[in-house]
Length: 305
Image (cartoon, rainbow, N blue to C red; front, side, top):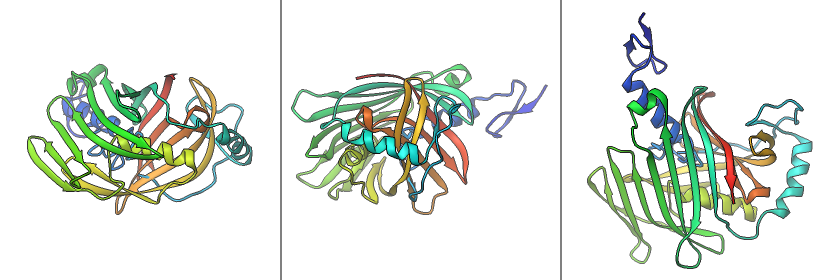
């Protein structure tokens, strides 16, 4: 029997199609890491959204509701109790950036479409790190992404300031490779086989390094109102803001979180991420909404530190 696929892109006898699978898989990826997006254009992979910087894209400050005893895993309850707990937890946040490996489930409109992994690890030189995001599709979504989609940033963290050095993205059909030459003030490389040469301003991030910068800013208690992010062959500006605090019940336990939202000017897409002070501000979950409706989500399942 014929029915429309979730993306309303085409009609099929099985209720699923390759175009819909690609649409959903791309969207899920974007939710976690990217600001634009989770544009994963900056997210084609955010926040991601992750975190995103679409991450991922974030809005005005407001308070969150009071904790509920029966809050489902991965959902938030906020208010005075959460705020008090968070205030107590913040001083315990780690004094310096620490490596971690986090595993997430990716959902597209409540449908589980993939698993996602974020890994931050020290590089050979002091204060240098590699931050890698991998998303692996399952089920029918493998029709669109038979191989894992990956993004990787090599970066340096000095006194709370993150500087990307090189970025690599590969969705199985196209690649983006950007080198950041801070001495010359240019970001150069290729995107989808075309040359890229962008003028850098101080503080510019790539779609992966932005998440580490946000984590550092939260740890230091000062989040800028906007960031410039290199997304493929463009530099885009995203607005960021704290939206309050919440207590999340997750698969790794109940944790207090700071909510950060990012949004590109003129866009109706908002990426929200929940960062845990007690875990060095590792992201617990991310959600991308469009016109107030949830599109994509990433929720933590395991964490190794």
